[in-house]
Length: 164
Image (tube, rainbow, N blue to C red; front, top):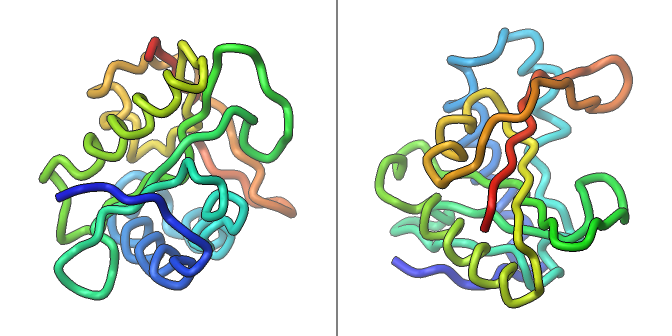
């Protein structure tokens, strides 16, 4: 397995991966009503990330990628950047491919590239489902918060941070 840089042409397959991953894997950590309201806003591949050169996919054996994820210097939803801090973004693994090292492979690609860009720390707005993954790559829990998904939809999340 290896990562490759995503391109805008990956939009449909990354969106399908996000839908499969988040629908299946997040169901055990979130109330069904919260998830139903949040998923339509979460499962669309971000065109800016796909064109950034810092978003990666691991191609799977079928037509869907086995995993995806990336990083940016700007915080999610803003253009604000703090020197030395990079943000992990939109990680997902296909439910049939979990526990195979795909997320760690993408994380390592992000880590190496972010270091080259001068980042010394990562932050992640982690879903409750992904807290264990981010802790496993060395990020520490900072605090719980809600991500506003538009309107009155709020998704419980955790801010995670750690040295690169």
